[in-house]
Image (tube, rainbow, N blue to C red; front, side):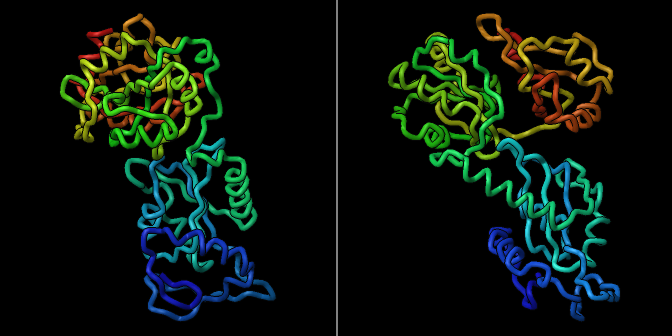
Length: 357
């Protein structure tokens, strides 16, 4: 990478913060007419009349929610990346980022990457300016100042107040866990509480694959009630929902769950799992969500807990593997006021919770 007249290795992007400060400190004088070089792209001849070149920044939209700086560096392979600034709204990654380039002429090459893919998501690339980029930096600084000092995790903008009225038994159900999560992640998540060796159980399906849910038993109902303050904070890039649970559900978790589980292999099938559904959502709402696809009501399976209440999840069988893959593009789109997470699933994974329901 060419940076301030010296070549440096792009690495994994962890040095971006230092470069960002240099960009701000140098101001408009930072960028000058590019020197002659053997750079991958031959820069056009620039002539500036009593003014510096435009600030070389582009904005990306539609990024995967697990996108990293390394992904963007690889996406713009061959260009000089000076800084990458991810955009957050209400403490959550918004799927957008600013990318500052080494020279103004490189903006044109960056724009040619518009609508190319990072992972399974196509990314929009469009022009930005110094003011938008600096405003993004100010928002990051502002968010960091108001964040709780005890945890770097992001909070949800809204929380379900009805959970406050549920009696506590000392058991909490977690939903939305990364499939790579293990007991150490749970212990770190509930830092400050004492969790015994047999106090965490991960739920798995009939094939032993994790479902993204776990049950945790605390030393007392008072501890579990206090632990609910972590509702909506994150493990990795995933926000975690917490629900007061019952001793009966805990006993079922001990019987059917696992103390620790590895990440399951992912397979491509015509079945998708939906998570985060409004509790009042029915099959009609799901059909409308997937209105671009031909789906029958019999192909939609909403799951319920032992008390007959919706779990906020459902399985949908599509007509073909191609349809299910295409439907994944609707991941994190909203149904009502809730954004919906979509996961590739299987008939075997679907069968167990549907039969229990």
